[in-house]
Length: 370
Image (cartoon, helix red, strand yellow):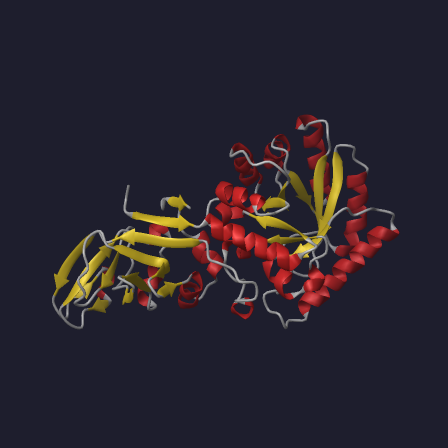
C-alpha cells in the first residue's frame, strides 16, 4: 500500500455527536453523512453517530442511502433532495425517507411507492424555501402539497422543513427572517388541519448559534466531523476534528542553492537544502495551489514549506538542513507534537471552506479508522 492515508477518529465523531446533541436538547439530532460522510466514510461515521445518540441519518442522494443500507445501517435515513424518477426505485426499495417540493415529485413518488414499495407508506419530508432559493416549495405552495401527500395512501407526511442560508453568521438578521417565514408556513398548515409530526430547520451553525431554529430536530453535518461552520462559531461546543491526513517520506535528496523545484520552476532554493518527496498530490485532494499559497506540512513536529507546485501524485518539501529520512511521518492535516495544521488553515490559504477541504480528500487515499 502506498504510504499515505487518512486517519479517521471515530471516538471524535462520537464525542462531537454527543456534544451537539447536548447543546441542541431537547431537540433530536440527525447526523448528515452525505458525500461519503464529508470525506470521512459514510458507513463508519453513520455507525458511530447512531451509537452516540443520533436519532437518524441524512444523505443527499438515494444511492448514498442505499450504500448505507448495504453497509448494515438501519433506522430512518432522509434523502435531502427530491429524487429524480430514475432514483425512486432505489429510494423505495431501500426504505429511505423522501424529500419532495413539487407536485410532480409527489405524484412520481406515490407511483413508485405503489409499484415497488413495501406495504407501509413512504415517509415524506416536505421542504419549504424560506429564502435560500436553492430548492424547496414556495411558502404559498406548501399547504396544497401537504394535502396531496396526506391524500395518497402510499405516502405519509413525516415532516416539513427548511434550511438556513446564513446561520454561520451569528449577527445576520436573515436567519430570523427565515424562521419567521417557516413559522408562518407551520401556522398555515395548522389552520388547514394538517398535522406536522416533525419540524426541523437547523444545520450545525443554526443549532449552535440560533436556539429558536432547533424545533424538534437539528441536522448536524460539518460539526459531527469536528469542524466549526465558520470562525465566528469556533470553540462554542468543544468539537474535535476527526480527520488527519498523513504520509511517509518516499524520497530524500540534497539540492544546491538556486535550483528550481517542481513544475513551472516557481520555487527556487535559497541555499543548499534537503528536498523530501511526499506521496500525496492533487489527485488525492491536496490542492495544486497549496504550494503557491504558503502551504506547509509537519515533519518531526516542525512546520516546513511545500516547495513549488503540488503535482498529481506527489508534493515536495523544503527541509533545509534537518535530518529527514525516508519513511518518516509527514502530517498534512492534523497534529504532530505541539503543532497542528487544520482544515480551516488550508481553507484560509485557498480561499474556501473546511467542508471543501475534507470532502476533497479523494477515495484513493485509504481511510484508517480508530
